[in-house]
Amino acid sequence: MSVVDTASTVNNDDIKDDTEDNGYQYSEAEKIIIARVVYAESRGECFEGQVAVAQTVINRFESGKFGKTVKRVATTPNQFAYSRKWNKQNMKAVEEAILKRPHPKNMFYFQRSKSKRWRNFKYYKRIGNHSFYLSSD
Image (cartoon, rainbow, N blue to C red):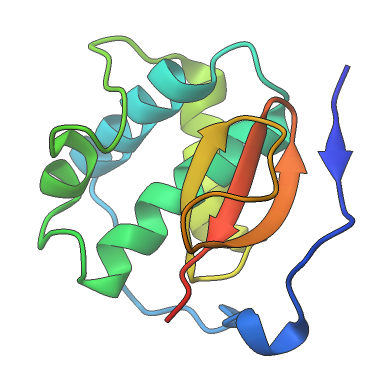
């Protein structure tokens, strides 16, 4: 069963639109790194939740605030769970996140929780068992 909480404490001014493609071409190795995060963080979750986790990694990388490489963003201690495993569905979620960008580009954080409050982040939405948050800057 998929749970998506669309009631949000975020207003439109908090959301940074990501309708423009930044032109970056992800290598197969980079996609695998992101798929490993998706596997570790959200296996067993609905597909939409896996896409959101993938996009969180992509957003962090593309912001330049969390590391200069996908590998650095994905493997920095205490940021994401990381696995040596991944599967076709995880890769499909990564590709969907890259191509469609369904979530705001300032969605940098998530946690396995129903809470709308976490540190100073702005709650965006709940997908499955994860709550997603936007950067407050």
